[in-house]
Length: 373
Image (cartoon, rainbow, N blue to C red; front, side):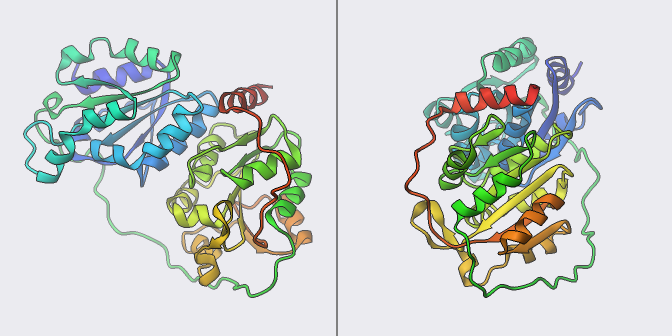
């Protein structure tokens, strides 16, 4: 059995059914051997992969990631405010660039600091240089999940020794014609986010799932209608929709509403790319657009200076969508369950209600129990 086959055999045996992957030529040898029992989620950003994997974990599914070591710098915030905060397991296989026969100076500079970085952020890691380092991989992975922790496996190029050809068919530009005429807006919204969330929660079904963005969106959802089927994000700005996508693909019998905001999409537009790519039929992302960074003092976002997120969604091929500032139309759009609902609201936060009193583990545990009922 090759080293690559050993890795996939271990992942298969402990029940990993999907992996998130961001390309690195030092991973080609292992990605050539992906078994038919494991699906690959091709990600555009490492932190997006964490969100997708986290969403799957809420449905009690096991995931892993394959990334380049420089990508570790792109996911530290999400790692802490998703996997580590909610105590969710994730093995991350990392191509250790800059460590062995590395010709690129920038990779050497970063590669020399990888161990120090992992130690600094309190992430356990194992160095894999040869077949001997993979002997106990299955047990190590099982321990990772049983103990609900993140663990990095640093894969030295010594495992493969030679660069392999790309494991997939080469890419080539291929996309549809886009005729994008999207309605603009210069009106005056009638509701603040608090009022909009109260309207949304009245329309949500008893078995429907609500997943809310960090800060005031989650606090206002909690104060409007706390329920076990709500999942409150306590960190990771720009990850709520990624989590919703990952979860929706694993619970097709439940409809999921993600309550998000314009700032989160400007902060991480990769969310819209993934929404357009996966398009779960049971997912509705509600972008409450107040043209402001609501949780940091209502400073203007790009939405206040002409950036139309509905037009962006249209350009990406998201055709199940709607835009309105009308309460009546909001109710109808929620009933229609579009993929992207752009609801225009006034700036302003509800500062009179209580903070969410639940700890991250309490939120996760009661939510996962509600899914199993």
